[in-house]
Image 1 (cartoon, rainbow, N blue to C red):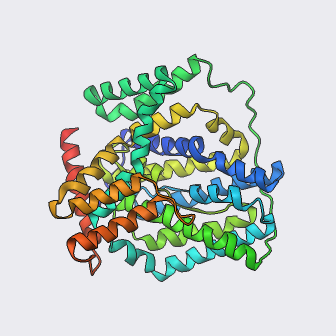
Image 2: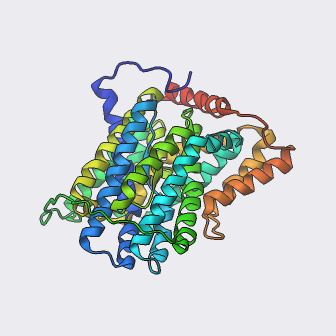
Length: 418
């Protein structure tokens, strides 16, 4: 039975872990990558009002679509803005008028709506072998695991305390390990006066409508790269995160709903939002809840947090970004350890496909960047080629249940060991 097929009644204690998982995913997103949005806004020469509108539109859009999809599917569908696209815009907005960029956002969003309605992306996802998918996910997440311990060189007290606490809680109270390091880390930062909220004044964000203009230059230099980067860097690994955790949600409604959301929010500055990849892994594993059927609450919790940040625009986003980088990377890495380990176990479980899965893992971990496309895409391509060469051919028919069946025994074993 898949995690979405049974909906037992919820109790108060069922809410704690998924809510914390959703909060951590939001914290990691804002604290880790949101600075790219401000950098892109600065390059484009946007006013504070337009920048605040960008923050409002992307946060509200991500929050609403995440809540809708998680509620509809009863699975933890975490949505987020396109991080690789934001990195791309830091360069692209330097030479593209903002109104033309908004027009390009609309074209890219419309393309995702068409893609979702066509069903083509779902058929493609089903053809990816489970071992390759698991190797890709482990490779993408590896850097986060490494950074969790790399923080010892930068901030040994903070990183060391979080790591020791995590290991101790895993030994004596595994269910509260992630919650424990989050609370302890915040308390330590407060005691060290590294979180200063004295000057914080909450101001409501006001959306600003920008009338789009369309040009061939923006179509080719912004819309097309934005579509490809978001598709390969976010949607593909994001869907594989869900599949590796045993969830069977079709990609079609996910792509369609997020595409529609991006279409509606683009005139207010939102460049693109989509299913999350890295932060989604925080909410899909055992750390979110031992019972997979209750992890969808993390998607609702994350959506609510995003909406709250969006309502106050730059104010709350700036608070999240003020957290020390070591705290964010260590927290994210430790929260993802279970997913990394589970993905590696799945990738290497089948002796026949082990080498192809290992190649996928290493290629994804290398984070190859070619032709403006990031490591997730190239890791997947290299893994698929290796699988075809070493095992004769790629699958010829849809295999959605295989990824789920591979993950569910691991989930059940984890529940037995908890």
